[in-house]
Image 1 (cartoon, rainbow, N blue to C red):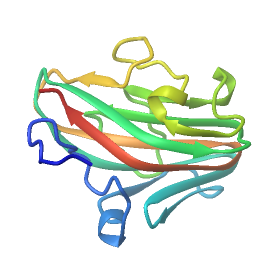
Image 2: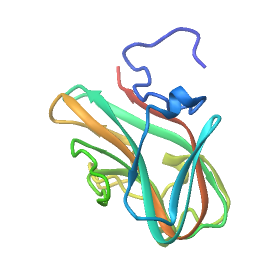
Image 3: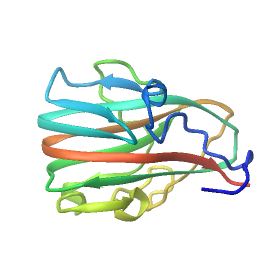
Image 4: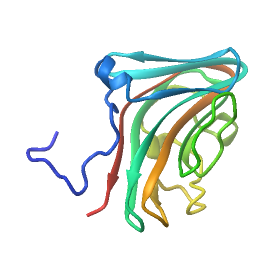
Length: 175
């Protein structure tokens, strides 16, 4: 919590605390697989479970300013996932229902990459092990060439994803 509002670097994600149905309504579910993966909105968080190599995402449009650096972050927790991917994207490409999404990954978890298998709880930029496609390194920062709408997409799937819970989703511009 901050004592005063910061309009320059404030959180531009709507409903990122998942506190109630109004916050949940800020997110659109992106159906990718017919069944076997499901996001559930809770009071204060959202949880994804998946099995049988299925996946699903949630997303929202966000307005950005060209050449401004943005930092994306969230708290993630889970336990005992196997054959699982969890990916965060920030892209100008709009998601399409019943189509996979894979444009401009920022960060994530990947059991083949060495994270997300045992118990974890922390900020994704610390517990994740997926490189940012903008920088080809571990970074949760992005910059866009043009101003306008981008889509923040959070996708998860796998063969045995017992559950990954997210809360406090943020995207903040640098001052």
